[in-house]
Image 1 (cartoon, rainbow, N blue to C red):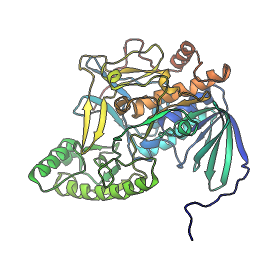
Image 2: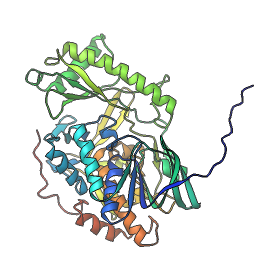
Image 3: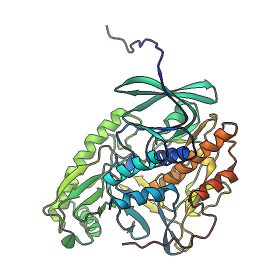
Length: 455
């Protein structure tokens, strides 16, 4: 007779490492956090479940840095700086960066890149500061030394199960795993933003294709109006890569049978999303190839290793960044960086963009308080799971602000360890001075000399 549970015997786990700072998750927030912590002189370990860094930018096939730029009083600028500048320099040295291009109806700049260049440059950036990397390792739990202090994370890999001790931890998991396990308050939206599965198309004739990002959108809209086709969502994004023979494609939308968004913390839904996404890729590409000039001999060269999750848990920290903060270009006394991306809400069958006024500064500041969870002392949370409302997270989750949050978290970890060990008591003016000394832009001065050339 089967029972609903099985018993797993208790066991002592080996401690396989001890560090000043342990960073979990190697996306843009995590890799910048590890870089900042290690360059502050702290022994640092970055744990990543895949075999490479970059998060959605690599495993999700995104191939575009969003939120690195802002349109400030009508001028396009690079608004996120700091250690990310070194990352971009390393990618440019491999000829892995495109010229920034105008995106979202030509209202904001984005930067496409070669995914392989990001993988290599991210390794180099993190290791150059003395941090260690542990790939192919999943963080599956935590151990606390008291109610407010994390002592160790539990990890599992092909080498078995073990514990890694740290004095301070940074949650860059995207899903807020460490925060949730440690008892920090968090939110989950009733209606999550929909994930997508990215893919790349090769064999395009670029001259004939021209501005195909406009052509594809028009052809898809016309086909839907004629009733001959139905696509997962409106506003498809199809743009050329570093080599114009290759184009990245972002036009899928993944859902459950009841129409709700795939939940990135549910493995059964994730499995459904992967299968559904590949079918959507197959169908959408067949249409693009059949009707789009310049794509007649094209083929799918790559489907992303994983679907791209936009939203799961969001911590409720000392402050929640709101949609109003984004649209009103809010200032904060405890700014640690800026975000110039619009609100980008992936709703049923569509993507809704909302921008700050055209004559505005074009970016909001990011407060340190959005990184600080409640009830856990030696933890900071950076990335899309930081403290934001759903509307605020629809903007603040993209790459640029995640880079800014990550560098701030890594630097703050060093300051916390130099003080009483708690994130909440970090001296913010000192943190701000350190960030600016390391090249970060906090939005407290006019963005002069930051103009960019866009393609």
